Length: 492
Ligand SMILES: Cc1ncc(COP(=O)(O)O)c(C=O)c1O
Image (tube, rainbow, N blue to C red; front, top):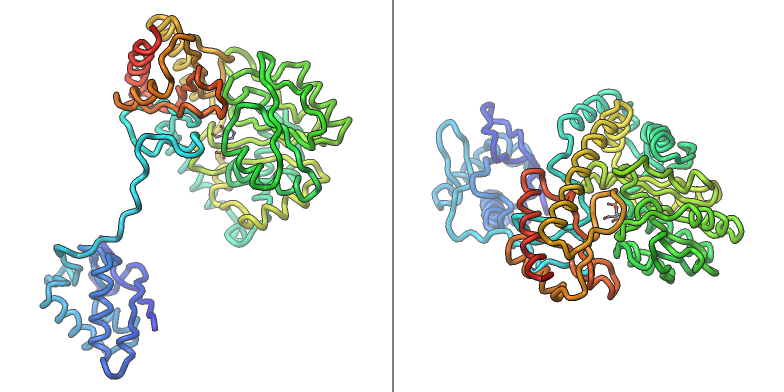
């Protein structure tokens, strides 16, 4: 039998003798065995917990009175077991500071997870570099050191104070109404999205959203989804594992060639700022894709992952605003705030709503409520706008500096794509050395660059995707210096 005791705490000596600590699962099977006896059973269970690392050195154990009460044993039984284990060196007891787990040599530690493979790149390229190097220009991340901690925690406090008790129960799979209302107003104001809060679904990141949509499409008979020929690799994987066939759309200076949509059932686009080439979808093609959707009943999924960040002009509004009944708009907090929040949202046309909500419910019932309420408060109070404005200035300055510095120090490379977002494509001259060797050289020098095959296509051998937003401010200059030095070595 296992007994759960409200047991020791590592940091808080208990003056009253009551353990204010956490639960500890002690295997008292032996203790219930009459042949062994309660005291021997408790000793064995404690030894085992220390040996396997569940009770770490220094952990404060509950007083004998508390543990005896929690386990239904006599106090003397516990006191005797403690005394025995002190004598054996498993525990230490000092007047006034309670009984603790001793710092023992040779105790088997909790097994460490297998080390992440060195050498960067994971299967999907966009997964953050598992090897921590002093500098990183790995694409896909905002500057997480600039997360607005104080404003976020103030919003969290206000949100928690105002939240009705029912908010802590199971909620609507679409997400909290407070956040859906705040987002509907924000997206209309900032991105020209037209949506009723009833048709918004809060998701655990865009990657969840695309999975839900893919399953809904498949269940409704959809089999082919067009995708830009270069893009975020995880998305394609998710579409494929849902049974859909991905049909590549060629890219040119006007964005995706939507004349290649043919008999696709749906299309996934990054119209504001193609990932990764950085070109926006031209006005003619925006109209063409909406016409295609109207004519065929095909679904357009608009991945507006970094729509808040345009530096050269006012951002172009979302495609969804042109045809809300045919376009699913998807936004995420991963670029504007932090990927660790895992908060994203989609607008769904009315005819898909119930199916999407059902999938969301099956996936995880709903996204975590406290973070949703905090984001609602963060947006409603104006803190989100302030943060985005501040980051826009910062990223714009970094992009300008990247372009100017490369122009000066490595004039043979070219930065392509519009001034927007968190990354830039750096095209290398035809005579440049091999890209994988360049990335490896950068790594040796302490700079993480995106994987060579990040773009998911052979042509990617001629360009790097530089995540200029990734490093903290103080490390940006150093990262840029290293980038220039390595590029200069390979692009003579
Ligand atoms: C183009 C694109 N869309 C979506 C995402 C993922 O967003 P989320 O973090 O919300 O899953 C990324 C992440 O890097 C991305 O590059």
